[in-house]
Amino acid sequence: MQKRHTLILFYFIFCSCGYFSSSTNSHGSSNVDKFPELASVNSQIEKSPKNAALLYQRGMILSKLKQDSLAILDFQNAIKIDSNKADYYSAIGNILFEHKDIAGSAIWLAKAVALNPSDETAHLKMAKLFLYTGEYPKAFTEINTVLRGNVYNPEAYFLKGMCYKNMKDSNKAISSFQTAVQTDPKYADAYMQLALIYQAKKDPVSLRYFENAYQADTSNLESLYGEAMYWQEQEKFAEAKKVFTRIVYIDRQYPKAFFNMGWMLLQEDSTEKAIRQFDIAIQVKPDYAEAYYNRGLCYEIRNDRTQAIADYKQALIFLPDFALCKTALGRVESGK
Image 1 (tube, rainbow, N blue to C red):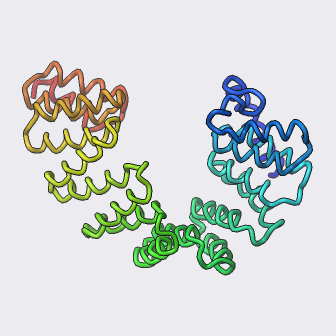
Image 2: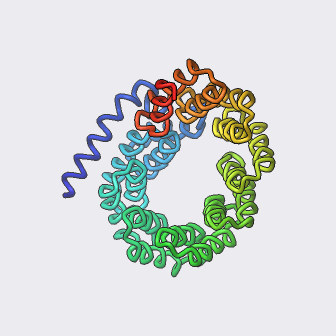
Image 3: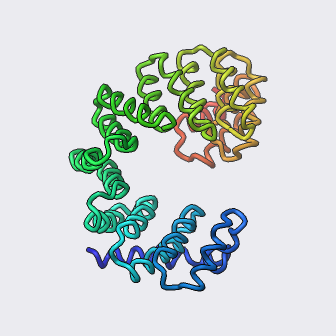
């Protein structure tokens, strides 16, 4: 089994190197402008090529640059020099986990935990693995190991909340997510989970959590989108439009805001205004099948069969199994 995952890792590195070699040279030197410290660590490694700590440091920088194959090579070379550092094994496990090689990731993380039983990062990554596979008791074991050593670790409470959420125990999930944000008031993901749980209950407290999530991470507009969708699902279209307009002021390349504005206008029979919103959504996201479909509905309502058929066909190019669209196309083509 271990040989199999070694081969998987080798294949991953081999396939990726061609891509990275075309965009970088000498371990990511084309990204020096973005990460100036890369030039410094490259220079240090040239003088001390057998320094495992420097290789690990460069691997972490390359991982941030999404150059995972080069990062893994550095981590592996660090392990060859010093095989007793848990962080080196954990780093490879993290990358493999992100690439959905769950079994391969588990092997490297297990090595990290064996070397350093108090490695919080490795234990929590193992917990994520068990969360992913639905082995919740094992996930709780890893989480509780971390909390016994550090009762203030917010990620541990967050992962515990995710386990409870998947187990359909919303009360315990809420408690865990609330503890996560009490421990770290900037934990945006925990605020989002609280917002989603309360949104499912149609509880307006979700609006506060969506806003908290946005304030904790203003680069992620999904929290504002969730806030707008709360109002839309309550059919409070005026409130929803205010939030979608706020999103557009922040980012005019956010296609879902235009789509949902169009969808609400369609419900209000303002087909001409709706078409303009769907037009923008499609300009921003040219493969937006749902926007083509809904624009087609607008044209169908306006008795423009030619445009409706064109939009329905275009939607089906991007989403061939779109059942509603197939029905609509058949309806318009048959003249019914």
